[in-house]
Length: 296
Ligand SMILES: N[C@@H](CCC(=O)N[C@@H](CS)C(=O)NCC(=O)O)C(=O)O
Image (cartoon, rainbow, N blue to C red; front, top):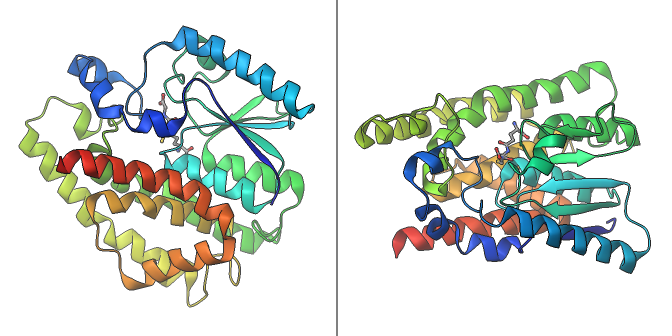
C-alpha cells in the first residue's frame, strides 16, 4: 500500500468525534440546522487555519517531499471513506487533511464553493480541485490506468457507472434521511429534517426512508452483482467500494442488513484488508460514539 500522510486542519478527528453533540448544543438550533453535513466544529476556524498552515509546513519539512495528490476529508463520513479506501487500495501516494470544522472557512470556500468533502487537489485539474466521491475515483482511476478497479471496456465500465449513479441518486438519499438524524448530521436543504415539521412527522419520514432502503439495496444484489462476488466481478470495483462504505452508516440505526450484504461487506474488507479497515475504523468509531451518547 502506498504511503498515506494524514494531517489535521486543527484537531484530530478522534478528538473532534468525542465532542460533536456537546458543541452542536452550544449553537442555536436554527444555526445548527443551517450548518453543513458535518455535525459540529465550527469554532476557532482562524486559529485552526494558522495551526494547519504551521503543521502543513512541518509535514513538508519532515518528509521532504509532499505527495502531489492531497485529499481533504472528514473521518466520520462514508462519502469520504469511499475515496480514502480507494486511494489506499490503488496504492496512490497521497496526503490527507482532516478539515473537520473548516469546510465553510473562507479559505476552503475559495477553493470549493460547494464546501464539500471529499475534495482532491491535483495538478492538471482545470480548477485545481475536484469534489464528488465517484468523480474523484473515476478521475484517479483514469489518470493512473487502474483498470482492475474501473474497467476500461465501455460496456463493463457502463455497469460500474450505472451502479454508482444509482447509488448517489436513489440509495444514498434514503440512507441519509434514515441515518443522519441518528448521526447528528443536519439534513440537506429541502429534506424533512431541515424543515420546521413536527418531530413526529420527521420521525415518520425517517422510518419511511429506512423502509425504502430494502428495494434499491436488493437491486445491487440481484442486478448489479448478478451472482458474482462483486459488482466488478471477481474483484471489488470503485462501485463496490462506494456501496460497502455507504452500508457502514446503517449500523447507527441497527438496520437489519440481509445476509448477502453482510457477507459482501466482509468479502470486500477481506479482499482490501487495511485499505478498507483503516478508513472504516474512523466511521465505525464515530458511530460507536454517537450510539454511546444516545444511550447515556
Ligand atoms: N455526493 C457527495 C456528497 C459529499 C458530502 O455530502 N460531503 C459532506 C460530508 S458527508 C461534507 O463535506 N459536508 C461539509 C459541508 O457541507 O460543509 C459525494 O459523494 O462526495
